[in-house]
Amino acid sequence: MQYILPLIIAAVASMVWLGINALVWVYFERKFAGHIQRRPGPFEVGPHGTLQPLIDGLKLMGKQLLTPDNADAVLYWLAPILSMIPVLLLFMPIPYGPMLTGMDVNLALLLILAFSSFNGLAVILAGWASNNKWGVLGAARAVSQTVAYEIPLLLTVLAISFMTGSLSLVDITSMQAGHIGNWIIWKQPLAFIIFIIAMFGETNRAPFDLAEAESELTAGFHTEYSSMGFGLFFMAEYGYMVVMCSVCSVLFLGGFHGPIPGIEGWWWMLIKTYALLSLMVWARWTFPRVRFDQLLNINWKWLLPLATFNLLATALIMKL
Amino acid sequence: MGKFKENVIQPILDCWSLLVGLKITGKYFCKPLITVHYPRQVIDDENLQTYGGHVELIGKPKDPATPKCISCMMCVTNCPSRCLTVVKQKAPKPTPEEEAAMKAAEEAGEKVKKPKAPKNPAKFKYDYTLCSLCGTCIDNCPAKSLKFSNNVYWVATSRKEMKIDLLARLKEQANEMPAAAPAPKPEAPAAAEKEA
Image (cartoon, rainbow over all chains, first blue to last red; front, side, top):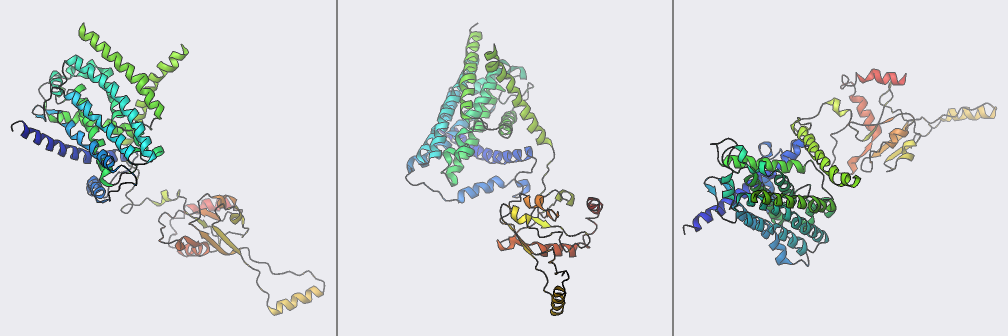
């Protein structure tokens, strides 16, 4: 009982946290895009449009759930759920504060990497089951993209666990305690850059949003989804973004430790995560979508060799 | 060496352009907004001048209720969407006395001056639902009688309302002119110069 209760609390808390983050970041992304294009963004619903994401959610829930003709109904509806459920799990091992960790697992990094690849599976199922050629094309792209970007991501993470000798995010955070000089970003700058780029590819975000490229695939894998079917994919995408940025700030930016010794707490984690999230949004509204061969070239010709080199160099230095 | 530079050095240098892009959008992020919240705020008349709305007629400088149009049909023949309809005016029918006088003159071998039709169009209809606002009519008008209006606020609930009688519109505008006199004043000298 004493193990299960904290877990339940953590699960509920991460659900709430995911919901709040999805709402807030949908709103912020639209505002951000608006200000880059020098328009106000959502403005009419609530003060400065703050109620807009809530109303959008209500609108999505009010829509009819449709299953396309001849689609595989079970797989079709399994896909958005499969995309959503692992995200809840992903929040659990992330240390948000000294006392604020859902569960301290020894294999936290492995768990996050393993379950975040469920998103790829969900996308494939969604595209394949919807009996739609754009869906299948989007799914096919998603497979080659997420599988490809998983590898450099894994290699950079592996380099860090070589350095720290641990796969637990709590341990990795505690090793970066103290002042800003202890952060891993200074020891692994190349890994940081690779991680950031692979993060874009992993979460299907622009400029790497080839799986849902609306200009050539209408909407890619979620073309046929209406109502909350689409809503779950949408929320999951923001969930994965938050998870990836949190992991990035834990791995490279010291997690909940502040730049000055003595000041630490969950707010540092929030500041770092949200700064990275803003970077993702900023990049989305700056760069055009890359072509698919370019996307794969970046990964196989650049990220993968660089990540391998980084891993080998780290191993060599650690050995010496 | 060339291949190396092309395939390795250049991509690394190109990464700089990503940062330049971020800098540009970041700059725009910090600049003030340029849109207005329409129902509560409207833009000033000066900005409306650059708006190219539906086509409308230009009146004669001395008689603003009649258009400069000479019914040459250039706009109608050149319009790719066929949204303009112009009907020429017919020559006025001579009264019986005039007819008799003309006949007498003809029999006497004199040159007869037949009454000419006025050049102004009898009808000038415009279907905004068809118009693509290409401006070909405006470019081709020899009398310079057509222009884009700067009417931003025009909405209609049916197709019929989008078919406008431009002559009636011009008359309406001419009647409203005294009320709106202060606004077009600064333009008046420029228009006069053009005619000179």
